[in-house]
Length: 130
Image (cartoon, rainbow, N blue to C red; front, side, top):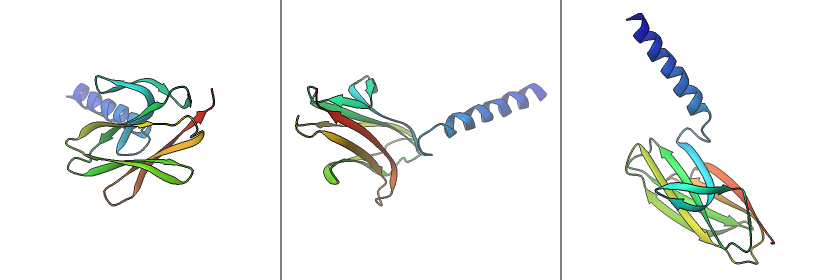
């Protein structure tokens, strides 16, 4: 019995440490990528040159089942796109993509919004000249 309690305590500590590494209590992963394969981000990036015109934003959402979240793409303080998702389970992977014009150089951001408009998380990438 003592071994079982020790094991459970160790697992709880491990989970707590991992959860503390999450970007947000309801987001365990949020990254930009060049592609999505088998519902996972491929070629994770933080900067993109303007010879590549498409980027993905991947979010692993936790414990928001039955709610809606939005990926809001922002450039030069202007909303360029809102992509809305219905969260169907306790762990829900979603991604959106944006086709970028070569002239849209500079800092971009994506906000992950709750249904009531609260910013749960925000991440930036730099779109640069090749």
